[in-house]
Length: 325
Image (cartoon, rainbow, N blue to C red):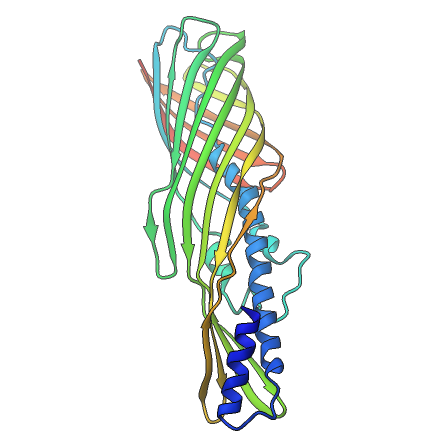
């Protein structure tokens, strides 16, 4: 690809009779731009690999430590999460030659606090043993804005639930080992990047239009410990979750690049760069603290749960209900 670009630029200047301007002067900016995009891909892939498990492992709003006399519990909740340092992770510890991620790509406004509603469908079955079986499906509905297309996001969590200390149907201490799988696809079209530069007194500009594609397939193994209490119709609970992660994310950004002469305005070169995919690995270990409460009304319980992830400082909140059968 580098040799191809050099040849194209050199031939153009030879044909235009301006061969006294060395092609490598222009190619240096293309090379810097390519390195910047690759750096951005690496940072984004790593950042998302660390943060996606936070959304995938949001626990259910379920204060009970055991099923009591109920054979089945079903519930639905909606929530969201954000990571205050997400944008910082794209620029921390790395150097960009040409691209200003804040101003040129406008990433901070589009992605730093992107609201993603996560729907959580939950069910738990009494097995007449010391362990109950629960499962939940987390998903983000597809949506599309002017620059952002969220194609799909899906998580499946399966857990075994056991009460270690029982203080009634909805109070005590419980533990739940679990497994989570999540996958998804996102595409994002940021602002066109425009970089002016000069060579031998002549003014030029490089224009690049990135198209970012993010895919992930991640796995988590862990356990949740919960303490619940029962105050008539009010059921507060709290606890901690710890899990280890595997799998990867991949980010590809294949920009279209144009080199323009400023005066007179002339298109010198237009080409597409295929930079391939950059993979990111999730944090090997993550842990979170959570707390919340449910309010019961007959067989229906309304609840709120808040999770705080310690490694990424992610904060998530959910609102939902459960029905006991």
